[in-house]
Image 1 (tube, rainbow, N blue to C red):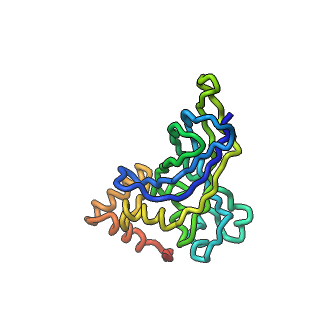
Image 2 (tube, rainbow, N blue to C red):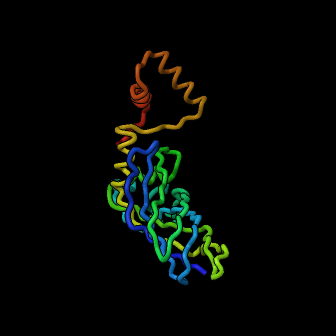
Image 3 (cartoon, helix red, strand yellow):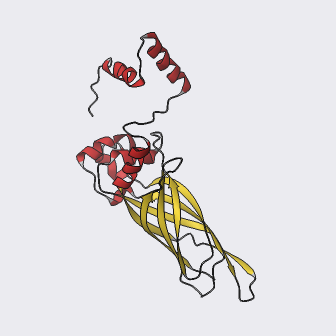
Amino acid sequence: MPDLNFQIEEAQAVPYGASPLLSFKLRVTNTGAEEAIHTVVLRAQIQIEVTRRHYSREEQSKLLDLFGEPDRWGQTLRNLLWTHAIVVVPPFAKETVVDLQVPCTFDFNVAATKYFHGLSDGDLPLNFLFSGTVFYPDQNDHLQVAPISWEKEAKFKLPLKAWKGLIDHYYPNSAWLYLRRDVFDRLYQFKVRHGIPTWEQVIDRVLAGTEETVQL
């Protein structure tokens, strides 16, 4: 029966995508018997291992929304689920390399986006947890099916500049803000009532009217 192992070799942005995508070069190796692999339907749960890196004071302040005050990080720092991805691996013998494409969002309601945005430099420690199904022929050329062990995983340090460069390409000098519909309506009425031409000026006006000084 096939025994598949996985290794992430590199990551790069997918050019000309309809939405932001990172492509991870995934090496799949059959370390078991010598049978050819017909197909693999491979799923990956991608986690961010947040305890595997150091955080500067600036980064700690930007991550308060996720983890609270730094003196509580011993209790609050836990792995974050980034996303799920799936790829169909074509026929191969022994080993092959495929592109595992991962969509990237700039939605600040997503914890992973807050985490990525809060970092200044360095790497993102990722852990890919694999599952799925292997299709392979037996000695009589009959198609067999086997599950991928839940113990299969691969660690990878994604350079933060790869994610930031991708986001800057799709959203240059901009960010998305998700608002509840009734809150947006109130903000829109404020914009119209005061004749404010842009949304940036609306936010500036609202912030200027608050007592708290926002430290950037």
